[in-house]
Image 1 (spheres, rainbow, N blue to C red):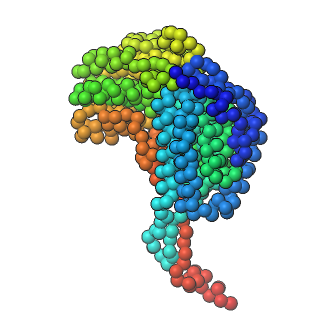
Image 2: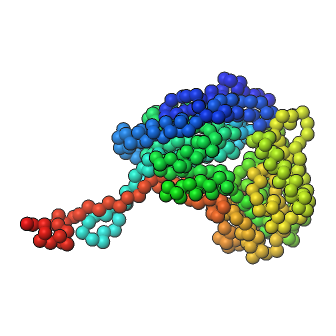
Image 3: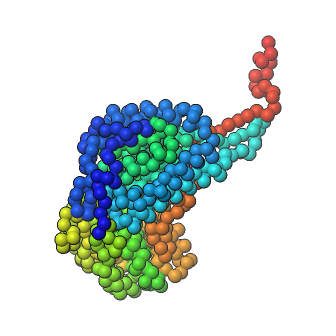
Length: 502
């Protein structure tokens, strides 16, 4: 199995602060390869002083007419160059991200391609973006215009760095803002590689910074600082709630893409092979480390036993292995600490009366030594009210439950704080439409799962967050809307009357 020369290929471990590579002045960050526990990089993250400097320089760079006065199609050229740079370095990005997160090369390669597509898409949106001549209702020409917000903070999670980074950075830059990106401390290297590509594409100095660091120090600074005009956050629900409180205190707009406990629904008329493949992919790809993971499986009672039996057998045939092995389907979890959290969820479920159908432990063998692996796990015999069915595990753990009819499965699916995604497996399209409309979720998949398009809005409701990303409106979310009136009469406002002429 081909490995990479870590010292030769991984980013050095310096901050990208306002266009310059610097040693950080904050707490130490250690990036670990989840497959075997080897250390990738140890370096100092950003301090509050680093953050203050980045914000000040970002504010100045964003206000510079050399950037602020660029026409949309001129900003689009920068996004196209960044997209080209990502595509040219896709293999390198893929390997860095696999070292950083433990994801398979197949997945990280797809994420790099997605990131390039995101930058290219928002460049195209700029090329075709229209402002609005609104309907006249008086003696003035009326327009709706859009302007940059200023300095935007993007706080991204560890599970899919390059794609999450692009999803925030591309529209924020396209809108004319300066951007400060704070990646997660468990996966800081991919964002630093993106910084190298953005810099090489000719991004004006100061407009973009990458500041790995602690949420307590850098995250709080970005949220609370008066010169940060907007925060886009993807991460845990509790952190998102705390962020929302801080944002409300300064009346700052935010978008929060948070957790999920997404239902997957299999009706008796579904194509069984298609449904099994989709359920497997929905929960066990990315080793379950996905906010949209289909972690609650509802199967119509008449086929429950047969379907679950086939699903368990298929799960046990999945290949758990090294992320650089092309045959691997389930790679290690991000960190040993996270594996312990996943195992604790399973242990609690068993204590609550769950039946373990498969998995529930780390795999055995020398090929797994030092790695944070965990077997794909299926549990049954729990009610929908059980803790495992209420809380996000963020690992390869599936709860299976029976249902009787549409009303029953809609009620059970919606009996949850989260509202991020849903999968429906049925040959009956009117049924899929009825159920999909009744489910409280930002995204519904019918006879597929975890398929994405940058042109289609994405986000959640309830404990899954607020706001939407992607799509043409994803650009407007990073802009201020302004009404503009121009008088067409040339006459003084009548109210002033004779007072105008002495």
